[in-house]
Image (cartoon, rainbow, N blue to C red; front, side, top):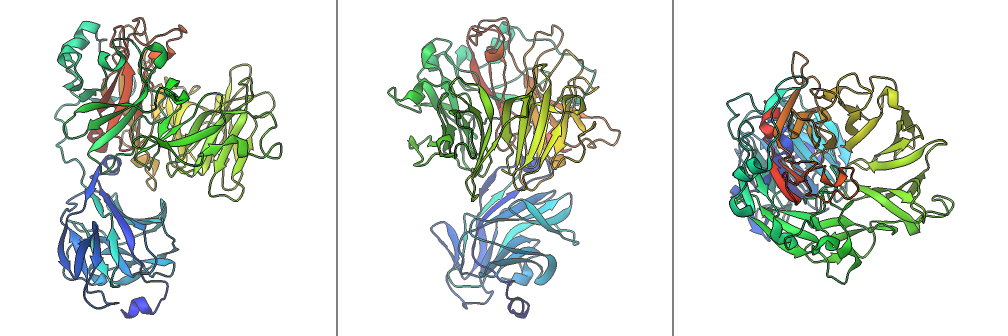
Length: 637
């Protein structure tokens, strides 16, 4: 106890715990967590689902328990979310459980209840891990590439010089009577053996060509009689997918609106839950009931249509749902807005209630000091994963794009407005998942695209022009973007652009994916909804999809590592997940504009990276929605 008392800021308060493990940095993104099963408890009880010290000496480290689940190999992490301010305790990763003392925990954070936390390894203070903390801060102890790392809110504090020994478990030591460990969770990764063949992993560039599937061929492997449910794609794919919709959802019409876009999540934050919630737009103008909620049981693959999200009397019931998306952290909250309005709102999909205050209200932006006087509507909104920062294109009453508005709820001056430079028009803007960076895509009359990247904390702006690697179709991670480099010498290349940008001349970022030929753009619409805070992008992956009329190659859902040095020989791997199944010349998808837009998949990844959702006409007369299970283990080998 002396080493704790002698440095006053190195003691603990109670923390709400979440623990997630994975078998490798990429698998880490996909492991689903589960409630901890406590074992070997001493002087503790389970109170309202939490581990609580209920006996023993007040102030002594004579209470605790460990998780029954263990990490037996590879990488992983445990997380603690600060929940109460007046108790002293420790928690972290441990190779065993000799006793209840804090010195028995191999890698731990220690909180003093006075606003300071520190790193202790087997009871010994480690210099460099001190940090202030407050309620809601998230602390992580992680094993990454064989090294233990300590972080707060995604920011790395310290990397240990001591190698971990397996197995590892969640271990706790509680000092204060009443100290609790709330919502303790541990993620156990998929331990499926690696597939035996070399498919679906192949190399970028010229290679195998797979034929398009006809409508009849597709019907042969889908569930019989157009039923919803699970099926397997035929060889050479072999992946598992689930049909989500059929004619019954639309009264027999072609009413399903396309999945909104690759960067807007149609699936909720379902980590640690048995079911996934899915929102789809069944267009009322085409005979549908309006935006609706589906549930998908991850264990049984059962799909259920839970019905419309809004009553027929609501204006929102007439929306297609394009531009709507689930929160990156709140399981039941959906962001929704109406074209020609000024507010972005959060809607609870189970209680069918809007939050009392808008997430972003353009009307509250001061005119003309911040926003232009003619600012009227918002369009193309985006939100950070913590729901604190939002961006949107600003329109006037004639729907002309005026610029981009950013609202940061935690800032003293919450609104910022970014007008395009002279000679350019804003195409769209996109806040990253951390809420710290903004990407502006701006075009000139010649069609050239420039990126302006804004550091929202410091106000600095960096510009990249088209020829030097500005991004086209893209998605954002935590402090980086993944997108199309239209002038790259590799066919339809995708690059990784990290912030802050270190160079505005080519190359601005490494190529992480490219295609077989210039007329094939497999990953046209990039999705990275599985981005994880605190992990380098090189330990993560993205996916993409497209539909085309290329005669000798099927359109496919593909995924790829964001590590350009993943292979020693410099080659890049692409994971072929499954066929898109779309025929742009079929009638399904209501291509009224004749530009194929409503028929293209534009699918998006869920938060775990294990599920990809898209819409396809299957070469027929109606659009339907599917999810496919991503065999991400290929990217972790």
